[in-house]
Length: 628
Image (tube, rainbow, N blue to C red; front, side, top):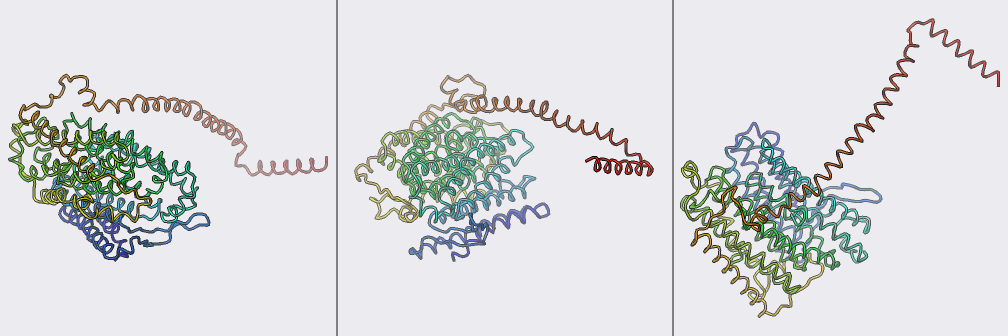
């Protein structure tokens, strides 16, 4: 069954080619069906491979050679796929969530003139993400890494007639290039140090590297992860990525692009386990990002922007887990987050669909009756992300926080604050959207309706997963074993089992649950009992609220500190290029033209002149020969 692994990326690639070549000639129904079935087929094969790994626990890692690729004296890079517990989980996330998003997109994008083009990009996106997680070396991972960056550019700027959307796409592309440079330098340093970039070969001799070299490799790889997974300071592209259609937001934020950085660090966990400096850096950046993004989410009014900053914050918690050595816990949270974040984005898309494209929560309210399925499913997703037991988000988030507490109570505290803020702004979103009086226009109210079945079916499936996915990682003192921890144990180089007493774990779980419940009640009092509403657009805000609402003016800071100096520097180079270099080049050309115009006059076209010149030449040669 493992040998079928090549079919997993092949199906979406075929879907991309068929839609890309024949999409305009096909009906929308056929185009969407082909694209969706290609990802569903990949999901089925991924499921079969996952079960095959379960049946043969003695063979946890399988390398499948597709073909011989680069083969020289100093560099050998076969095109190989690696099937192991880590890749199998990510395959299920990518293809499973991807399938539901494709089904949802058939209804959501039905009236869009670029329907076939959208599914073409979507299939290509899934193909590159599958390549990223299946590759058996860093080069194949990097191909997939760059591929998802390209597809994010195409999908974020899908409605390219809007200049702002194009700018958002360029911002994502350029900011990711900054991180990608760090990743590429890390790969080069791995090859220079170990003479290989194949995982098995590198990890088996990683202990031969010096501590400084290992730290440098780990930090360079982390720079790449910071870009792809939107960590401070390379996070500002992700909220702007909301410019793309909502299914794109769900795909990027839940199942594919932003999880690439988590996957890469877990795959390279041996480097971080060997470098305390790198691990501490990952943990500190992660918790700082979680807290920073959570505060920004408090006062955002765009329903998709709130979810975007929520994604940045949740990714920060995952990096906190990676930094404290809880690799399987971070993968557990990646999995549960994929369910409830995809659900929340697709639910937001259902709301936007019903509102005729409106995304401002200040113009919503009272949608509970008009959108009963969307309401119920988004409630489940909101509870899950808020960390309320027994929903999935509680178990995965609590596991990370428990490891953080064991590592440093200070990290745990800041992680807890970020988690509490998450519960507040998510229930703020929920109350403002579904309760109270409708605050939109009469036309919008008249347009309100539940989404078609192609959109509500994925919501129901994701809602069920958001409720029950926590069973994958039940605490060991609740259950004999933590399944996901045991399953991923073969790929974790240096295991750090928890030594927390059960009483302490119960205490931490109690604090997390009570804190979340209290925060949700505070949100209920503010937005339900007191019926407080966000300030209208253009209203004067208090200083701190204005600072947070404007996202701490980070974009403006980058604009002044980075973009404008670079623009000024480029103006200098432009002057040098046009006034100095171009003048020199043009001067050389003009001189040659002038000289050639004089010499050209000697070319009369008369044979007698040419014979006379030849005779003179012969006489000159003889003369100089004899005078010697």
